[in-house]
Picture 1: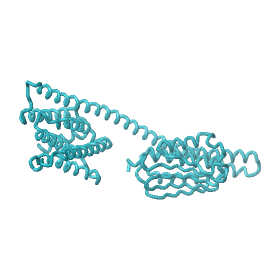
Picture 2: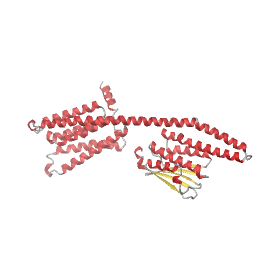
Picture 3: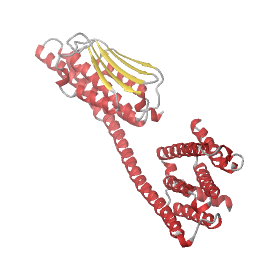
Picture 4: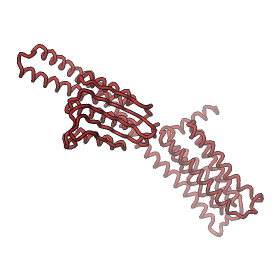
Length: 406
């Protein structure tokens, strides 16, 4: 029965911030550094006490030492990537209340200002465990403990001096603060889950669209290109006008086939595949469709990156390849993706005719690539843009923009 009850209690706790890893991780970090701040303040206050305070008031040492010990254990688990479950959060909440209560007892009861630390402790509990019932129960327990301590410890609680009203006011703040924070947190969590659900739906739709294009339109365009290619061979050189028309149509068909590869391979990015793997396949497809020799190289180990970052870098590569095929008339294209401790660098180089002076104002290709780079905190660099032979488009993204996923 005890085991079943414990499991039921655990299931009731889990639906809070613990199912939202980012919220849970952030809450843990805030509470850990908050406790270190409290320890630092307590030690500073003790340092200002007269030199004769030790060992007569040695009980004051227990509060910072115990807090530092508990916080050190949790901080160590965070630094070593250990699991901090709801049991750990429950333990932290109990230890916080216990240490704060101890500080109030040592400080003389009602007159001690240590009670103010009850408020952030209850606030953290309300953020992590979003259940209104649990928050109300925890607040009630803390209120009862504080009331008993004020009534039992020290002679400072005097009804004639309206201390009873002050006590009621302090308890009222507890009952106001914790449920309000819990309500706001729960409301924001519902909004967050709704946005996540919509994002997942959009990703699934993108995947389905890419599969549909691959299975229908792309296959049809490929068959059309085969027919045009065969017609061009049959036409030979008997009719120059017909040959030129078929060549132009074949080029246009290749362009359409290549453009369709954008959403198809972008769907693989959404599915979670590594950027390097998708770009390698993308470059192989570019070579197969356009006939332009294309080499892809990868340097460094690809870290886990957000889908948005991988998608934007893929978009830059696709647009750069499109520009090379449609305008540069290259005999070779090189795509390089490299990773180091601080940067992700993507470059697409061709040996074509180069770019005109007003290349940035022509079409939306470079405008889109620049927007993609800036969207992920990066920079787009275009070299050999003064009519010289060959062009290199480089997208540099700082590692810090996606380090949170690593």
